[in-house]
Amino acid sequence: MIIFNNIIAIFRKELQGYFTSPFAYVVMGIFWLLSGFFLVAILMSPEGIINQIAQRDQLGVPTPPVDVAYEFLRFFLGVMGSLAMFVLPILSMGLYAEERKWGTLELLATSPITNWAVAVGKLLGVMTFFSAMIVPLLGLERSPLEPQLPQY
Image (tube, rainbow, N blue to C red; front, side):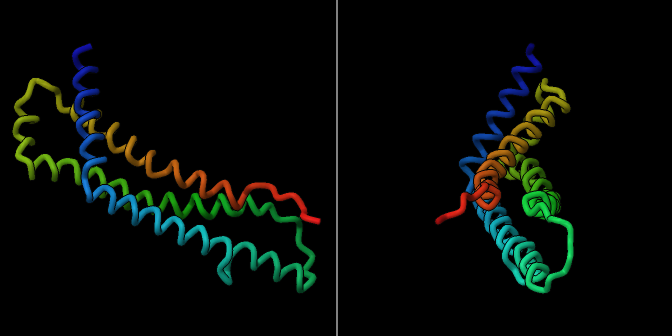
C-alpha cells in the first residue's frame, strides 16, 4: 500500500508539473497543429482521399466502393502513430531533465522509494498528459466521419 501511495504521489507531482509548464503547452500546440495539418492533407489535398475518389468517379474507372471513413482512419492513425513516436520520447526525456534542473534527482535516488515506483509514477504522468493531448483530436476526427443527411 505504501508503494502505491508513492506512485500516486509521483504521478500527481508529474501531472501538476506538466500542466504548469510552458514547454508542455508548446509541445501540445505543435502536436495539435501537425495533426490538424495532416487531417486536412489526408482528406483534401490533391493526393487526398476525397480527390482520389472524385477523380475515379469522373473518369468512370470501375472500382469497388471505398469506405472513406476506414481509409481516413487508417492513414490518419498511421500518421499519428508516427508522430507519437517523436512526441512521447520528448515528453519522457523531459522528466529526468526537469529533475536534474531542479536538483531533485539526487533526492529521488536516495529516497526510500524504489526506482521502479518512480518510473511507474512518471510513466503514468506522461501517459495521462499524452491522453489529454489525444482527446481533443477525437472530436476533430469525428466531424469528417459523421454521416451527413442529404439536404433538399
